[in-house]
Image: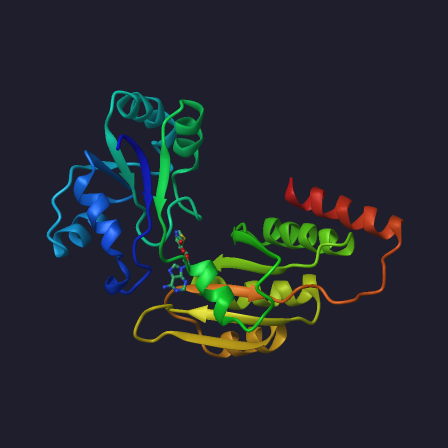
Amino acid sequence: RPGLTLVATPIGNLGDLAPRALATLRAADAVLCEDTRVTAPMLARHGVSAKLLPLHEHNEEAATPRLVTRMAAGERLALVSDAGTPLMSDPGYQLVRAAIAGGIAVSAVPGPNAAVMALTLSGLPPHPFLFQGFLPPREAARAAALARLRAAERAGLSATLIFYEAPHRLAETLAAMATALGPRPAAVARELTKRFEEVRRGTLEELAAHYQANAARGEVVLVVGPAGDEPPEAEASLDERLRAALAAGE
Ligand code: SAM
């Protein structure tokens, strides 16, 4: 049927492409993808020839009205990202919003997502959870983002936290978390669904020390246990912390 279908693709193991994902991609009038150099070989491997259209952070805003018009005229469009579930730290949110606003049918073929897989393997409470995606890469902005999370915890938030991170920043991010969040159980899930899949569990400090000594390789998700029962912070101190976080972020 006409409209938009979000199609999840593997995060490392080609066997994870669902039969319904393949059928949807085969039937689509066009497949919107982040990078044709990633999606074209994946489809070719499965014998699917589809018309590929690029949709990435640099053209999503400009391309969206045209794509909504095409769907309104009866086209079936599928959206994939390079890996995993579209929109999850990947393009597609603006298109989904515009499609909903335009009365276009939006559906999904669910499948792999690194955040949920890491959460379920972490040994930490599965819910409530907060998916942060990537923290800002620069030190000051990252510290500010962590301070905001900490302030939310001081105000009562108690959720397992999930982060994406680049491997070369993993050790410093773990150390920054240990400083900002205090002693906490955590897990690093690496190379999920791939040959060298590994989940390492420990405190933030232990994990920071481990990855300082052994540089992480491949793709990683960081899962941090919820805030425990800390002594309530005085209002004035909380205000101060929020002010510092905002100042550091601007
Ligand atoms: N849309 C994807 C999803 O649903 O998981 C995530 C895309 S995001 C641009 C890429 C990040 O996801 C990586 O930097 C890493 O943090 C995480 N990631 C993706 N695949 C992974 C894997 N196989 N193992 C561990 N982390 C992975």
